[in-house]
Length: 382
Image (tube, rainbow, N blue to C red; front, side, top):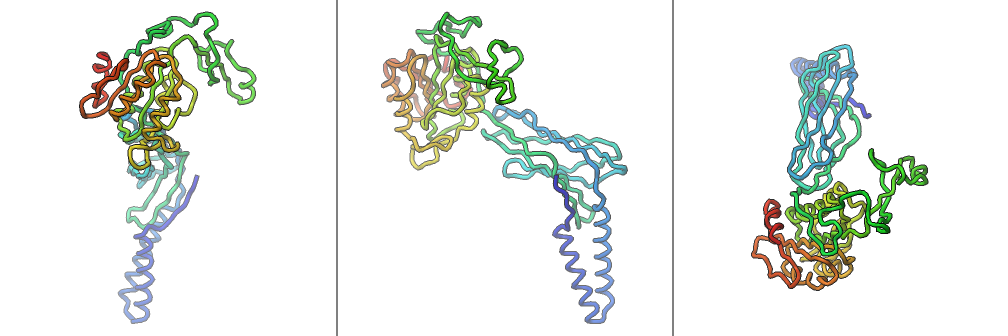
């Protein structure tokens, strides 16, 4: 926590003016400049007396919710309690939100009172938005001095893609077309997938005690039914648009919430994190960035340049089986996806663009959308 009392630019100007007036008055023998300088110094003294007392405050700022779909509401809630023996006025909260600074004037705080204010956070852009550090500023009525005190730690708001409910794409080799119907998989098909933190309701027989002892956190084995088909979602990040990310998120979340394994790829390669639950899928897709290199090629998440060859390479190296869903705005890639048709039980191309849908290659379903709202209807006609 940082504490300091400073002169504002107006206060520094007032002090400099007082010094000049004193010098001029004594040098020229005129009393008027000396009187003006004395008045300026008295105003500065009064301002310092206003801001000098150290306020006793209890300050807490909370971001709620910390994860939100793009465009939904998120707010910062600020609670300020006056623990001192006298009332306070002139308080102003300054909170940095992304690259901007948000200022909120607080009402007068009587002795022992608590004030709660909230202010909206921007959610129009997908990604991580840093919130903070938070500073409380107390200034005098003349604006000559101020006391600045920092509170708490910065927070992070994660703006995720928007999603719409979709049915899981059927696969000819699926044992459960609508997802697992019980916790009992066919004999011999359950395999270890990853370790994750324990949540209420987990089977204690799956606790990995060695990792729990090492990390100090209760860890459990996450098992998957290897007989279930995997839904592979490949997102083309060249010229990336938000409807494309939303479409990829909707497909992946639909499969994850139905209990199917999900594999997320971009033209730069697999996205990090081995968890395949819906929450992890949304977290990963929240951070996907458009390709940054020149022309149609680029990378995602800071990886090396991929471009058209990156999409082709991702298709070539993608593990087969289950369903493949390619989300792209390039009609050329729609034709190329036919080359991997034999390796997957079902191939769907979601074409996100304003032009007419490209011709569907043999064995490939093409779904054309220009916005997320069109996806459920178009998906049902694939």
